[in-house]
Figure 1 (cartoon, rainbow, N blue to C red):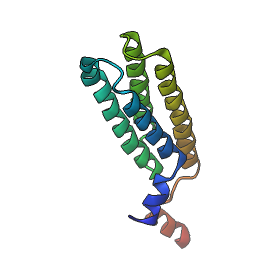
Figure 2 (figure 1 turned 90 degrees about the vertical axis):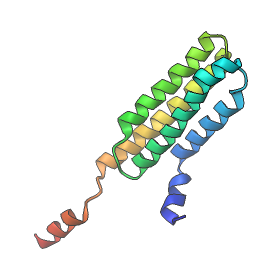
Figure 3 (figure 1 turned 180 degrees about the horizontal axis):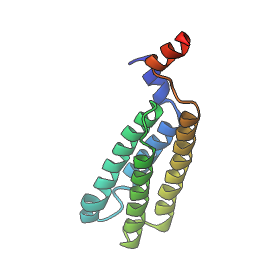
Figure 4 (figure 1 turned 45 degrees about the vertical axis):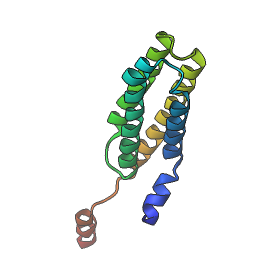
Length: 130
């Protein structure tokens, strides 16, 4: 594992995503089996997709909008399970709060990256020639 990858995995954004994943995994046994299979398992899959999108955003690729859409889908699934009496309001609100925290951190990462864009090798060599 490269040092850059290690430092990326230790960012607060990735830490919050791991926290969200752990929390969903801990409460995933509360709803009935059918709801677990139809809603909770795809929700956990969405958290995995969110992790990949956040890693790509941290590397400087523009995955902000996709990651935000994935967060909205996770929040909607949590409240859908609450509405179907699979979870309590407390569980859904904790997931919603974690998603809001992740959204704030994504926002900070995205706009710090757009404020300081990384120059490509060709752009920096052209600047040196001028």
